[in-house]
Image 1 (cartoon, one colour):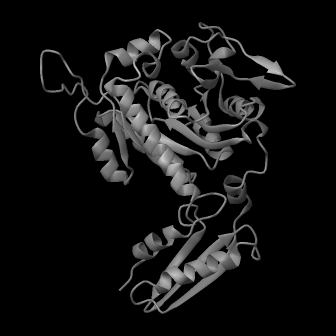
Image 2: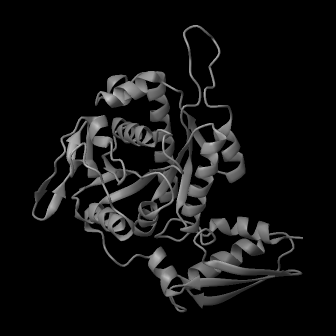
Image 3: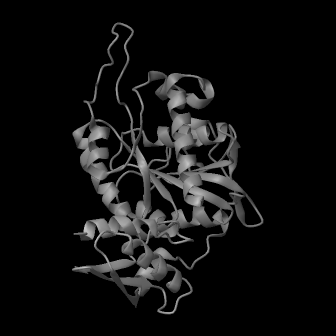
Length: 350
């Protein structure tokens, strides 16, 4: 007999055409009841007579009637509440990003996992693979992208829009460009959210294939703002093999799932260290954390990045690894991740 889990899995195939996610993941399919050969469920829409109503109902009925033992499907229509509508369909246009096709926000549950290093080199990998790419440093508490790319701490405006700096084939904006290297950001709550939206709306990003967003660590206001402002963004979660890192990363995953954002996968940073005195890699921060989290969450582990001394040095010198050593083993890992993420977006587009 078909159970609710099997029904939900089958309905993953019903995709919202503009949000590019399944109705199940968007929270639009609810109250599934199975009675013998009959399935009853509720479909929540913006309006009872919405333009996609018949399309969704037909797709739901067709998929469920193909399940073993299901002969009848009943779909009840209800409406999303105002909060749900605003979350799924933001009404405030963000002018600066209207020509950006895809968004990847790099996140972690805690600091010190190398999230910014991953974000910078991932953006460079997209660019090296031939995509027009931007990088937004949204880490309001510790913006370090200007240092890693040797960019000046200033931005220019034209016709009321902020112009990104261009470096190594990237268009870059960072909060670190709006203050000196030793200035502290003492922002809380609404001010943080306001600044993030400001960077999304007033920066003239232009025509981009990908905008990579470096989020601050944790599950606070900046991450929530991104979730609410760009519902079509995909999240790349960075962790290390340590259990203490996994605890915080799990919280981060829960946050983004709560806001119905697509999590593209996991990257385990500082996975192991190769020493010239040994043929075996040294697991400084433990073993198997990324694989364990992948099994628990069902998210793909896209890469295990080694503890590469040159990766850190190159960032400190303003010449990231994809620029200073593009053919290195670690650079090839970033290029592979960029290719896999590009394949994901191409698959969704189809």
